[in-house]
Amino acid sequence: MTTLFYVFGAILFVYMSAAYVVAILRKDNGTADIAYGGGFVLLALSALALTSLTSVLVLLSVLIVIWAARLSTRILLRNKGKEEDFRYKKWREDWGSWFLLRSYFQIYMLQGVLLFFIALPVLLVAVYAPLSGISTGVYAGLLLWVIGFLFEAIGDAQLDAFIKNPANKGHVLQGGLWKFTRHPNYFGEALMWWGIAVVSSTALVSSGSYILAALSFASPILITFLLLKVSGVPLLEARFAGNPEWEAYKRRTSVFIPWIPKKL
Image 1 (spheres, rainbow, N blue to C red):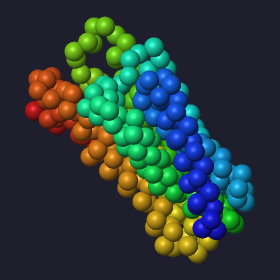
Image 2 (tube, rainbow, N blue to C red; image 1 turned 90 degrees about the horizontal axis):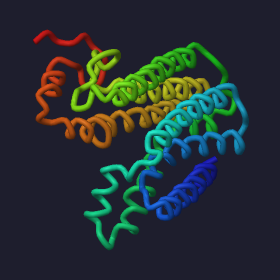
Image 3 (cartoon, rainbow, N blue to C red; image 1 turned 180 degrees about the vertical axis):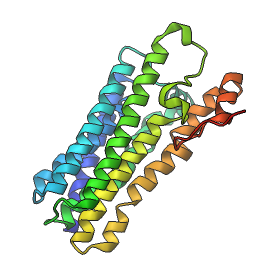
């Protein structure tokens, strides 16, 4: 069984290396953002192909494919015809002659490692819960995922509509879901993975794998940490620091979990 994890890792290694080659040809490391969702799809399909099909594994795979397809498509359309993202442009300048090597390890290989650990819930079910079926816990996890998906999809749609309106240039989106959290799309993404972990842990518990069930939650814990402390909230909020409209919005609005705005 453990051998399967090496197989999944090898598949992901080849995929991320191929994405790196494409990025070099395109001269755009934004390729990593597009490839991110595709990596989850590849792992989910590999799990379906290499292990026993169960209703829970199929459900998890479908949820991941829906999430990843929407995310990658949105990023692809958003970046079409545009220059390389400001983060990657800065690294291209800062890394100089080491750019190619550091890009491979610090962007593509690092992303591959993170991707593998975030995808653990589906991989653990594929390998260690060969007889899992649908139960109450699975429905609870599915409900969390649906709520998260709506937050991410609606939040992104509201943001895209706001940005497309020239009258909003220089202003901060404060309506819709953004009235209750400064990052409804990030909250939604994290909640989806908490839902996936609930589904996975339920299946693993029913198979007697209690330690592995607990390990499933390493995925949402990791992605929540990354969104809150590393690649999501900090990077975005740093761009608005000092903007009076943003600072007022920040004081009254929850950073992550939706909540009633404070009255200042």
